Image (cartoon, rainbow, N blue to C red):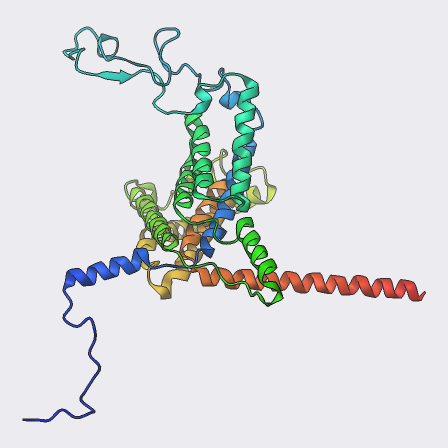
Length: 391
């Protein structure tokens, strides 16, 4: 019998012979529930909060037209009888809808004859109170953005507050509102106030006062909820891109390369009021081969990103390339289609794929640059004062 030498011996793997289900359970646990630094969520909170605050500040222009009782969508909803059809008014589904020849049994159910969406602005008609509620929601959004009192209760209030506008004026619902709602939902789940917030700054300040100059601030404590919310947002973002890419394959314009014409030549989106853009479009139209090549590149790039993102972003080697491509796509959407707030929200969502240690490196580099800039200006001011005194 051959003896086992030291060269042949090896350290046994503790997971050798592990049941596949146990391996799957460990993988899922590590993927969803491994504690991570919540710094990325702090950056996402600030980015989304600025956009959300701006969007709802815009409602201040013509607030009554959006939220008033005689606004674009009436408080009474859709009804065939005056005074009926409120938001929660259920009426029998009978011959009014189905017609006299209907065989529908009137006793088998009820149907909502008013609005199918709820908003507090459906029930408040006094202009003063409409403004009061609006200002309260704006204050909550501001506190949420800076991270003051940024508990999950405040996050939930901001999410519910944003829904009041989306559901009061559903005719204004657009992609930006949908993505904003999704971002606020995941921010409500995440520990977004644990980093890059006023709450965090106040906590560090209290510890420095208690422990003195010897206190060295440490990064935020890794949290399970930070990883769980990150994975939910990442998976949702992949589904969004995959759905967008596969839906494009259903139409002919994305197969024949003419899809970019829908927004490049659309006066509702394209910035034709900018002379440089109009000249650029005219130049491309005068050189058809450039127009065709540019359209083909745009189609291939968009389809590659939206269809390939779901599969390539999880690989560390291709992750940064796909994230950069996503940022470039939404930058072009903002410039060529004018959908600035939508693009900013999408860029904030894709930040979920940026590791927290990278965010910390960005912030440290930015703070060092600002510190150097301020110190150089301070030296220049000191030199100017010295020269003035010497004269």
